Amino acid sequence: MTSFLNAQQHWLVFQNEGLLLLDQNNAMLQHDAVRPMVSSFARYFSLGVYDNTEYYCAELDPKQVIPHSWQAVPLRHALALMQGEQFGLAVKSSSILNWDKHHQYCGSCGAKTLHPKQEFERVCPECQLSFFPRISPSVIVRIRKDDQILMARSPHFPAGVFGLIAGFVDSGESLEQTVHREVKEEVGINVKNVTYFNSQPWPFPDSLMVAFTADYDSGEIVIDNNEISEAAWYRYDQLPGLPSMQYSIAFTLIHDFITKCAQ
Image 1 (cartoon, rainbow, N blue to C red):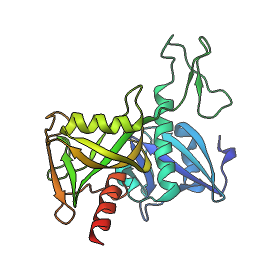
Image 2 (cartoon, one colour):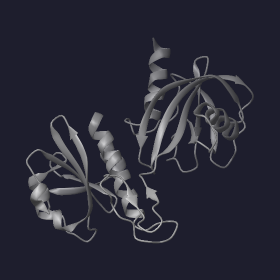
Image 3 (cartoon, one colour):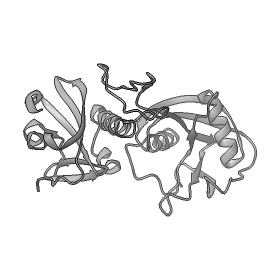
């Protein structure tokens, strides 16, 4: 199994929901570090070649003891250490490994699924159903009212931390329709001028976050007391506690607003 290893490989290896990194500099594992562990991989996949470097992802047996020079970093924390392609590769790795782990058997007939030649596909040999990694589209929106934006707290947020309105896309909806529905359901107001901002893969659990900006149109804030426990308008220079994950698209949306208002 080690015959495919070479010096140009980087590995994203997960164990017990943590990403294994070198303890000294939080670097990804390379081929020489991974070689002794390959026989303990529960699953592994090629992610392709980026900047002349091959990337692989793998799930290590949860009982396997790791070297003292490695550390298991929770994925949320590990993502904060990564930028650009590495961020996307870490998200992709988590998604693929979880998909493969949870699709070992056909959801229709219960037969053991198999890997065909296509890398990211599992096929039922009995009923021929194919299973691919799941992607759940969701929206997040920054709502502006003059020099204020609407910020809201979910009950599961850390104390004092506010974020933006977000939610999953329902069947039959466009992304813009989802924005209008989520805003109305969660805080009771209407918005206009819904405009695409950016997007970001997000592995909690398997989302593609599509970010929008919008302007306040009408209505008074009425929270749903389910997904939202508190919401209010805040000036750009008087914002409450912000998401600590500076790599998140929510953080980017908020700081883009601050920058524009401060100019």
